[in-house]
Length: 245
Length: 247
Image (cartoon, rainbow over all chains, first blue to last red; front, top):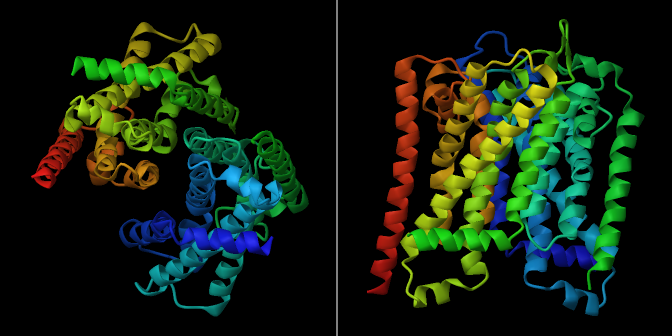
């Protein structure tokens, strides 16, 4: 398994696109900076800024979208060049192959969120919106790590769909719709979709303004929702990879 | 040119991309319908006649359809390189600029058709939910909005699609740019200046989703036309570069 993960990391060196996608980590901190600079000059606190730069659209849309595209890229390139046959001949375990890709997604997600956290601190402290406080920075880093790990598990269905497809069109469409569904189900029932559950899990202690309703969240139930989707995804990936010769 | 467009249609019929894009459009409609089950103090959102047809416009335009339309365009452009059919086409000979232009025209038609499909789905739902509250002027107004959005989205994303013709392999970049570009409209709609001049919000203003002044609408139309012109310039620039590479 470790060999597979190492091989996956070596393959990443050839994909310049992966580095380019990390630039998306700057989007929300930059928009938060613009928002507080031009629209909301009075009364900025660190949590208010981080809610904009990290806990809002980054968690709901940007990170899942980037990870969805990454899942599709990781699976598509090998399918496209018909590399799977050669990999099965080695032989490597089909589920080992699937989980090695997942480790890449997890690692990438952590890198992405750490960049977002550092950028958020820079965009909030350097223009003088908020003073530098270790307590809020550590809270931000802790929640970013949580978001990264949970979201990588949240996008496992996309990885499973991509593993069963030769093309990239269907997984890409599904990525968009999966995120769109998560965004909307959060207003109906947060325990239906992993992405909506994650957004509420990270606000569980109620210290993120505007997400106060998350105080009453049932964290085990929200985690169970993610677990159910993940188990189904792994079964789907197992079935679709075994079907492919 | 007609033959090239006809050939592109034929090629698309063999591919499953059309089915996937139709599926994506239908699912967008279903998801917004589910979101309409949300409650306000006055009841369900869906209880208001026209809520569904109105709200699906920004959500589809800011989250899903521009990326799907950019994907359609980039897929058509990149597949010639991927399937190694570009060489054969150039041997016929087919002008590469004309070929890309034909693909852009097909994308334009598909963009309008996707929005019209969305219109038909939402209209059917509204007819089932509030038949008596619908009027002909309201339906015609929505038809005009959806039609203009189909045209506007194509114009807004066309520079991104044309960029793909430069490299032929960077379709991932295209999809990523298109999604971030459409998603950024959420923030651009906060200021009246950016709402008028940012292409995605500009098209919503032209389509009538945002209430704007006549001068702002003219500004938005100009921005969208400039996007179209930029695509043409990029296309011509690419053809010029190819010629220079030859000689």
